[in-house]
Length: 377
Image (cartoon, helix red, strand yellow):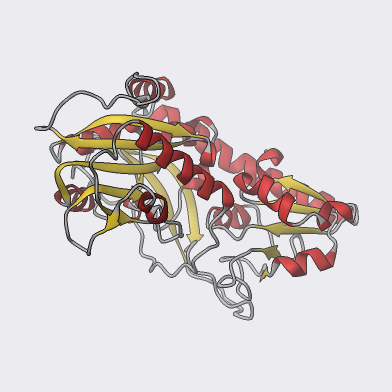
């Protein structure tokens, strides 16, 4: 590969730690009748030796992903997070909020309105600047973080939510790597990025979403240094120290710690293909659920097509009638899935399991079952 410059610190020393080969753009869902072939591009992760940021090497794709339906698990986590930051005293005296959301959907503005916060106009300063999975979509990480920092009013708090890198390493979540997602944050690396903007973390909380999600709160260096106290317990809010220790244990700055991701990619692809082939040989009807971007590289790497997986259902009307990138597998309405009475429904989003079982009881009532793709490893 040509020399890569870090998206945060501009350093050029680093290591290629994950290579998924040539993959289609995971955010472009062609029409079901489009015969393809779809363009493919290198998909690689690079670890900066200077600041420790894990990042996407290159992305020649153009973001075009249809907006997905917001999962109940994401809504529940947002509610929990707002409760925790309020209990930590971080909303005290705050009146204005600026939100940087994810293009995949979801907003905390309604929850924050219940605490008296009002959205400001684009570019205006705010007491709370919230970024929920938005920062990772910026190619220029340093510039994007500087923009968010500049919008903090005096005494303001920057809230950053991200899928934790130690989780990705620990659980072998290789398909977290995708085009359009430029950074994969450890709390350690993000702390360094904040310091470059004269910001410091003051609290952090972890959640079970996606196997391990973190919400980090930061303030300016020249403001009171004490951590906010939890109003319910009187103890320091959050678990910043524990998260930094968890990073060290996972080896988030050690290229060798990422070796398991490459092996996991090969194991997952082989296991999925073998399972789908065995189900077909046994005469069992299998459909998928969750046309998520993280399923794109998995299906392509597994060599899956509609002969093995005839369709994937998704609740987002914007994705229905399209097909999974890099395959001929169509995306259908969940009502069609129910009507087909599959023997197995392969779920590509583990966090959705309680929601889909409750939403589509007909699957199990007709003798079918839900299979979490993570259990096929």
